[in-house]
Image 1 (cartoon, rainbow, N blue to C red):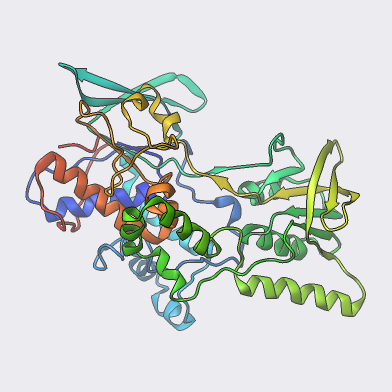
Image 2: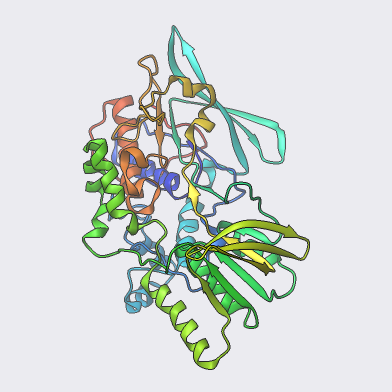
Length: 438
């Protein structure tokens, strides 16, 4: 049973399907619970011009099984765009196109997913002092009286990352998190005259450019505490931190080496911007300075000290960090591109969390095959897709190793429950909403 049905568990569904075709034994069965009413992936940031930051080859299957029928290239062939994409000469498709690819794959597993449903708790089922099953209790969103219990031997949690606003702030009609940007913008009445974006990462830079294009008479303020946007390091050697082999090296490294790893390579993923986007924003500002009509304003080395929401505006008190000068900025809308925090698997597990072991920092101990370390009395498998940066490194919740990670989990489940040999992933089709078990 999978909790969540974003790209990670969608890749798991593909891996289960392909394992079943390759094995002659009884098939693995898979079912998934998803809060959203349909498949979505960062839909609030599907800007028209935004491209992927990872190669299309890091899709749901290619790096595990290049012959899969669920690859991005197969999708292009079915959409009759393969030749045109080849002529496009890019590894990085439009984000909206990759989302369409994910929807195309998800549509082939609709019968395995219970959409519009949230997990309430996970209950251990004990027999003779041993936990032999897990009961996953779920209820329909908006109809809490409809409660369903699925019994499973293996649970895969991939409930995603959680948008975060600065402490004390809540979203309003004029104050948004970047994850909900396009949805909120579509509902905004009229044209704003002043827009503000807080943050220095890719989303913040893209949103600033989008607002600048969408409202040609508005001033757009980009506010961040850095001196300038920092470029993402996507050079070939640095990109190797997202290779499957890098997960092995990170997992086996001592804690002080793991910490150094994050320090050295945070600029591959965190609070950084593609150089093309940086150059585009700089060119906009320069052109406006030549014409003498500045609309895009970069307030660097500036922090938001106070936020006051009023019916017709949001007032931001800003501090210029070098001078300490305070200034008030009235804005019609403000978008906080302030990132995400990892999922908290303990919130899903409920009482079952008592059987899970933790490290000295209170974080869950996780094996290389993504299985949570549990008490010896637990015969079930609890697997994490995401929330394992402390054990598996930078790619824990990213697309880069999604296909490989899903295959590792399937082989771990099969190996524990059946004694199946690793490396038996092929292509198949599993039917019905049930659990991942033998």
